[in-house]
Image (tube, rainbow, N blue to C red; front, side, top):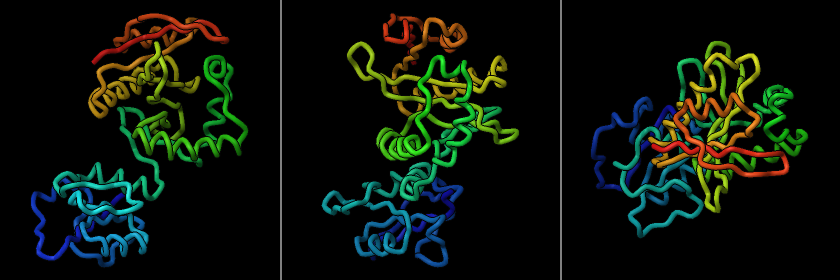
Length: 265
């Protein structure tokens, strides 16, 4: 978790605006005893940027559109464009840490890590889940897939399938989130989920999927999301309708017929 933000600008430049937008991180204006393990540097000075990266800090480069920092993924034009959410994302991406996505009343939802895989295999060890979703690969291939997924899906789109944990005991109880799916010849944002057998019929799926819908509409500013469900999966069909989605069509695959639900903003 990001704890410290170090703002170090070229000589003569003043820091404008309230620092409250960086809370809960503490703000410093010169590097000191802050550890690279929990700190991020914001700078417009190439030399200071190189020094910070060499010392192991995550960094955000403030560019005047004339300066280009090779290899730096997080660039902002103005300090005022940065806040804690942006800085924490930059920190987590550069440190290869999972980002927390949101919390609901009973769950926490965050990005997946390789360390989650043993529990994920336990979740998928259920015929009622494997009936509707593809099984996991063998461990080495699944590990490689997960590492690429973190880098390419989360890193590029900023969303994907996430891990759902029970707040009360920390148990991994599901996998849910948003992905890109080709529907009617266009790339659409699709919501999907699976929930452990002993957490069903208790409102967990509705609770998490409602939060995912809000994430899509509010954070991603999308106007619609889609839910694709096997016509035999009656509970998921009912959930889609409960979420306010309407069936707009169907599609056929080698695994059977799927219903396509659309949920507008």
